[in-house]
Each structure stands twice: as C-alpha cells, then as structure tokens.
Image (cartoon, rainbow, N blue to C red; front, side, top):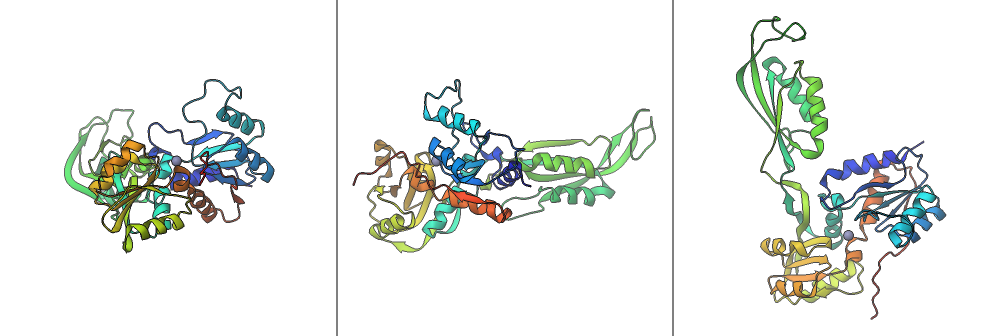
Length: 365
Ligand SMILES: [Zn+2]
C-alpha cells in the first residue's frame, strides 16, 4: 500500500518547498496526504477538465506545476473556474499537489528541462539565490570532533556547489559549572570545569538545517549544546532563477529559430532581431522578462522565455534576441520531468501524463 504522502515526500526532497518564491502557494492544496494512493496524474495546470480526467482514469492525486489556489480563496461557491475545480476535486476525493517556483528554482528543474530540449551544454543557474546558505557554529569537546563532524556531513551539511564536507575548526577552551540538576558528561557538580574544545563551523543549506541540527543534538555529548546559525553571503549555485548554457555550435538567427521551433514543438516564436550568430542561450520557463538584464549581463545571444510585453521587447536593443515562445509551450515538458522523477523512485506506481491541452491561448494562423 502506498500513500499520497510518499510521493509528496519524494517530490519535496527533489524540490524542497523552502525554495518557492514568497508569493507562491506550493504543496498539498486539496485532499489528505494519508490517503491510499491509486494513480498519479501529472499536469501543467489543474483545471476542471483535468479533475474530470483524473476521475475517469482512476487517479486520486493530481501533481500540477501551477497552483490552482494561488491568490487565496475567500468564497468557494463555484463562481469561477478556480472555485469549480477545487469543489470538484474535494467532492471526488482528489488530492491536488502543486510544485511550482520551487521546481523553477532547482538546478535540475523546469529550466534544465528546456536546456535539455535545446541541447545546451555547460549549463548553469543564471541568477543563483543568495541568503539560502547558513553557517552552523558549534563548540565540541576535542575528542568528539570527528563524531560530530561526521554526523553533520551525513545529515547534509558541508556542501557548497561542487564541494562537500566543507568545514572549519579551531581550538580553544570552554568552561561550564553544572548545578545539582545537571547531567554534565564531564566535570564535577558545583565546580567550574575547563574543557579543551574545537569551535566547529559547517556550511548548511537552508532546506537541510532542521535535519542537521537534530543530527548535531544526537551526536554531541553535551547535555546543552551551544550553537549558532547565521546567513553567509555565498550564493547557492544550485538554486535560482533561469539558466544559461551554450549551443554545441554557433547558429545564425534563422537556424536558431528553426531549431527552437522544432525542439520545443512550437507553432510560432515572437522574437527580436539580432545581428550576430547565436551561441550562448539563457532560458527561463514561464514569465521571464524580469531576467532580461541578467541574460544581457551574462552575454547571452538569445533569451528564451515567455510573457514579454510589447514595450519590454524594445529593451533587447540588439544585445541579444528575445525569443518569446509562450508560457505553456515553455513549461509543458515539465510534466515529463515530474513523471520521470516519480517513476525513478517508484517504478511500480501508475503515473499518467495528462492528455488535456490546458493552454488558454489559441493561435489563428
Ligand atoms: Zn508557469
């Protein structure tokens, strides 16, 4: 028997919700994580038609990229598609789980999928997130350094980009005096004890902090563990907005547009003229105009994204080509990414890709 919670746990290991943007609403939106799972339906958007599809196909979990409840619901009486979708899901015991900007921000998330489709190499996050890396500082009796260090590393501390087990320690002398209620592992009650200690510091990503602190408390010999956590300036190069990579060889603008159209299965591309050939390509699934300056700063020749407004196209100014491929089109392959990720961990689960085209925009050509 499998529960919905098992899928959620795995997805949240892959894309921790702590990485979602502040305006977002990721996580379980309807249903109960303890329900026994029947089948999973993966979709970009969760609409009434998608809930109908889940019912018809016997799926009681919908994993959607876009959260159907986004701006908050004050009334639920079926007056618009959001309310009707939520009502239908609840009436039919369908759980809806959203994995949105946390997946956008992952190194192997939405933007990686676009890079993969375009065949980009040497890819990296365009704007790595800062403020996500913490430094954990703790005082450890010298004989216990290795045990504590080991426990912290095993719990996920010490990783910075391509480096692991990053730590620093320096010697010093700690003092303490326990009262009659204390259970100090060394020293005498009522007497000041001096203990040679190491001040140990390890870097920890925000998403792993709770796990690392509980590992610290179980591995550390002191009854009361003194520790401190502070934010460090290093950006986390594995988390952030957009990606940038290179085409294996330069393409002229015409060939690049052809390649883009066929790789992303597009009906059309809205683009700005560019007078050079294209090698470096920045991408951002969904609405990416906020990253235009970063794409230009990173010397991209093209920026593949969606939802550019008329006046924003002017900002390209031949620094690069803006290629607006449509929001739905830029993100639709995310459903393959999610389904593959679930199947990788649970090969026996039935994971179905939605067959409903939820794109609200049609093209008349
Ligand atoms: Zn989107």
